[in-house]
Length: 395
Ligand code: PYC
Image (cartoon, rainbow, N blue to C red; front, side, top):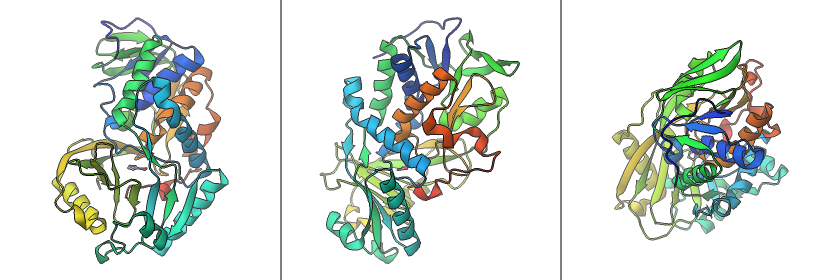
C-alpha cells in the first residue's frame, strides 16, 4: 500500500513524528487541502502500531464541555465520509452508544451532558431504566446486585470502525500525494536555534526542516524533552481485550462508568472490551491477568450469559493523560514546533478532526478555531477545559 523510501531527503517542509492515525491524518490533509507535499512522517516502529492499533475503536461526540462537543462532533462528521474518501472500507458502523448511570450523581452528569450536547446539535438524551431495558433486554438491570442501572445517556451517533484500516487509509492517501512515510526510523533529537525549529536528527540521518509536528501519544514527554518543553502529561497504560467471535447479539456500544466496562461487538462477532487505566504511571504495553479478571467479572455482572465465552487476545496502549482530561494541541512556545498530544483515553475518535485542525495549524502557523480550548498555555493561565465527566474509562 505504501512506497518504501531507501533514504531520507536532506530537507522537508514539514516533519511529522509518529505514523499513527493522527500523524498520518495531518500529513494527508496537509497534502490534500493545503498543497504541502514535501513531508516526511517519521515512525520509530511501524505504521499504526501505537495507540491507533491498540484502542477499542469507539467513536462518539457526547462530551461535557462546549469545546469538546464541537470538536468531536466535527470528527463524527468527517468519519462518515472517510471510507469513500479513501476508497477503503473502514467498517464504520453507527450503533448508538449507552453510558449507563448507576447512581443519582451519574444521572445528573448524564442530564448535564445531554443538555450541552443538544445545545450544539448533537443527538444525546438522558433516558430512564425502562428505556435501557427495552433497548437492551439481555442486560441484568441489577448488575449482579452491585450496581442497579438507574438510566443512561443515549447517544445515537455512537459508532465503531476498523482501527488499523484508518491508519492504512490515511497513510495510503498521503503516500499517493507524495508524502514520504519512513517506518523503523527513530527521532533522536530536534534542533532548535534562537527559539525556532531548524531540523531533526534520526537514526537514519539528519534532516533540516522549519516545521515539526509531534503526534506520538505516550511518547510525548520524551519528544518534548528534545525541545525543552514541559507539560503536565503523565502516562498510564490502558489495557483492553477481545473475545472469540460469537453470534451477533450486541448492537449498541455499552459503557458503564461504575463497573468500569465498555464493550461493543465487531462485524466479525468479537466482543471488544476495556476497563480503567492501570492505576499507576508506567511506560509499558504489557498485559496483566489482574486486568482480565477484573474486567471479566464486571462484564458478567451485566451479561451473566457470557460466562462460557473465551478471551482471545489482550493488549495495552499508552495513555498520555492531562490534569483536565482535554488534549494539548496547536502552536507551542518553540516556533515551528506543533503539538498533538494529551489524548488520554480518546485519541482514536478524534483522528480525522485532529488531522484537519493540525494540518490547518501547521500550514498557517495559527491554531485552528476548534482547538483554541486545548492550547498548551491554558495550564499556566489556570484555565482548564474540564472534560473528566465525559470519560468512559475509570481513572
Ligand atoms: O472515550 O469512548 C471513549 C473510550 C472508550 C474506551 C476508551 N475511551
